[in-house]
Image 1 (cartoon, rainbow, N blue to C red):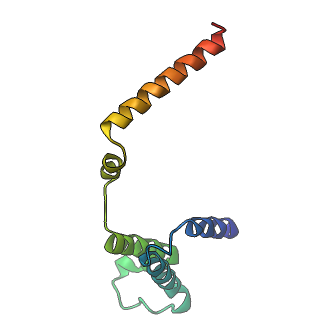
Image 2: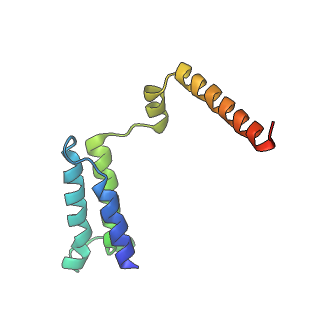
Image 3: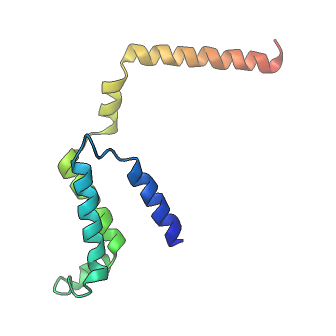
Length: 114
């Protein structure tokens, strides 16, 4: 089980672009370091409130939380709808929709032998 999680994590990290966005390397390095803290130093968070202890003793939780916060800090937050608006114009989207509809219609006719 641990091996599958590790292999999946390595595969995801290998897709990340480290050359054009240097902050991605910082995010990975800091998150891994923060995630290792409960394993390497058991008493590191002992002075913090008891309510937070279950969260702070989980390396996965700390690494995930730090990665999300650092990613928003370094790379910013852009809503997915904004990305779609920037990448595809309305005219292109309409053309793609009509082409897809025509293709599906053609495939449907071929299935029925018409």
